[in-house]
Length: 436
Image 1 (cartoon, one colour):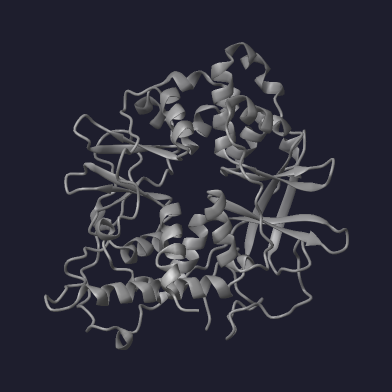
Image 2 (image 1 turned 45 degrees about the vertical axis):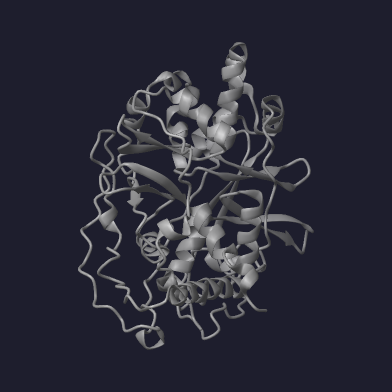
């Protein structure tokens, strides 16, 4: 069985029958166990002159749909093409990605009145089992693209320097490296910057010292705030992708670094970082059986639908930051007085507001803050309770999606579906019922 990835399994770009890279001695990587071309830069206290980059290549291709001969029911007629998706980056109303971007469900999979519900359950289980089997035979390394850029932060860097580097390179996280012990020291994410903001909000007299604050002091901030420190999780790139997914779920991490051991120096070697989005896109491209996951979200109740945290366009940004911390979430839907979704404020939006070490913009309203988003912001995506994971996997395959807002026909908020929800469902739903 072959599979599609962001990188070819061999220098010619062909994929052999096993789907695994053939042995080669012609590597240009930072590790002796992979065939990925990598630029790795460890940034110290003089970071601006040390950044290097390489162009990323992407060769993701769609795969054919599941063969109709293997389906329990006759294949439905092909649906009409969906309207073009035009992400709108405005902060005003009317920019929400319409749920019709996903394939309409009713014409696609009509249910015969006499068809028992258990048949759908059986097909759903078959799709989940196929995904799990795929994840168990693929290595974590397989998700990596052919060429990518890796920036590693020395823990001696200041918070301000690291923030500027993230913005300059358009990234939202980076592995940390302790140069004193030559060991992997965890992952820097937007949550760390939000914790720093919370700390200085509670201790305004210390704000003038923020430029001297260094990354190796982040754990002290978490202790002062009473926030549980994130687990320093990682996985060897040769371990199964299924294992990486389980570790992400257990630690509630949205990304996991690939860390191997250099056989020559017997020290850690950070290879890359893989995210939930990249894993789910890898599945969407390579596993035809995602088309079997047709049960509506409203039936499987996948996502969050009760006590969903929201804010309005007039809510101060600092209040939204408090919500992100208290709920341990990464986004807050922005709604009007009638519950109509206007936008979503994400934790990464905080990075734009504090660039350059200026924290005055945190007093802005959400509406004013969203105007500062980059012009290439992809927009937000919505779905309905009638959509299934089959259509959502199609969306993930075509677009960079990190969450979907669940709305009704009038765009009123019903809930939020995150990639963590999807990952947990495909790994754990009905797992105990499977025969080994």
